[in-house]
Amino acid sequence: MDTRLMDLLVCPICKGPLTHDHSSHELHCAADRLAFPIRDGIPVMLESEARALDESPSQAAPLSE
Image (cartoon, rainbow, N blue to C red; front, top):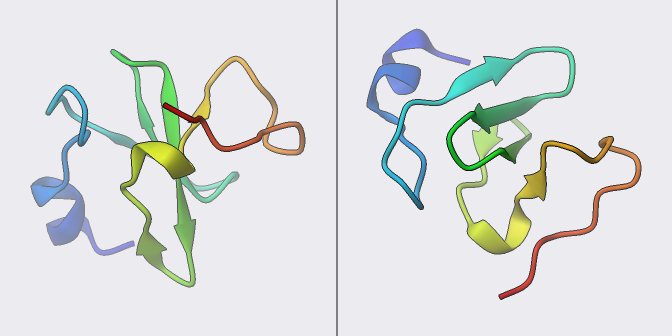
């Protein structure tokens, strides 16, 4: 992922910083304990598509409101 894009992206919930997990192709918000998927190189910054960080990616179901 482009580092310039990473400098601009923040968590859509708390507006905090995100870290890029290259192995799982996700952006992580430590404050909210959420992982946002990156699909086809595009970050999906929707709360409904995020998974809780205490779940493994294979178990993850999208969070619902």
